[in-house]
Length: 386
Image (cartoon, rainbow, N blue to C red):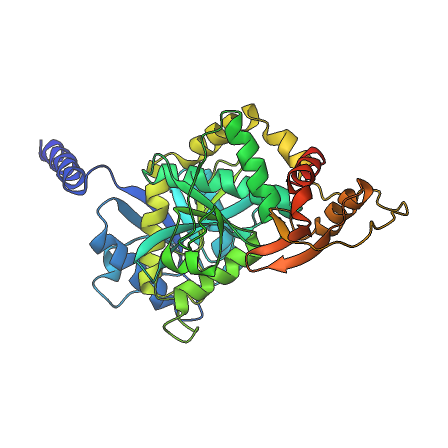
């Protein structure tokens, strides 16, 4: 009878705990060694998450650290002090569903899987998703950024943002990716563009917009995203300690079912705690299912066609094209990517329109006489440059 009472008591305690925290606890594995700051920093981050966020149950994976009453409240999957064995134990815990997700210092993601990070923007104190920050969603920049946009939207929705605003950072391929997303939107894909905080607006973002958190989801290439998240996380500490933000974010990819978030070896206690709760939130939001849904909706709207179109035009501009007589260029056409700008100019030359390439304050521009602006725009659109 005492055993029955004990079981009933434990069950009631779990129900009360779940009610207080707003739902059942989500078990998130955390690597317990490998930090540049010390293993204790990782454990302190887990303890902070356990104290602060009611929905997360950190599960430490690695050599046990004791000597602190807080540490003893944590669950452990113990291993020896070997990073390879810790990684194997983490992968095993995910595979066996002993944890619902994981936060790792490193993880062997296959090609096609990337992580979607989240930062706190300093100008207005609002969070912003960076898509993406580690891993590789595709080997070609344009395709990778288009996929990152879809994955960033899925992550935002898993966090409870039903219609996230999207902007594309002004890096190589930004304009073609914006064009691809616009085409998909016209075919029914539910992307909602945000706007720059600068006077001329637009969904192609500048550095000012990152500081202001102008959009919910900022799309960029992974290497740029990785640099940005490091700077946002440690800009007020001198770089050696990542003190703010949510880490490098959860993994996304076509057909990928695990939720594994990345932190760096310089991530401090607050970031570790935030990464744990970020991971728990997207697990609760069924992130892999949302990625599948977003990809299905994107494909219905011509996603694969746009990926094909994003392949850089090595267009056979090998032919000798005579440059038309020079005229004053008093009109600018915006929206051609920097990698395509010279070929775009040659297309206009071929049509008998004098044009020049130049770099404006928001990116490359095609300069041409104003009298040819309408015709030139039509030609560039027809050839896929606008």
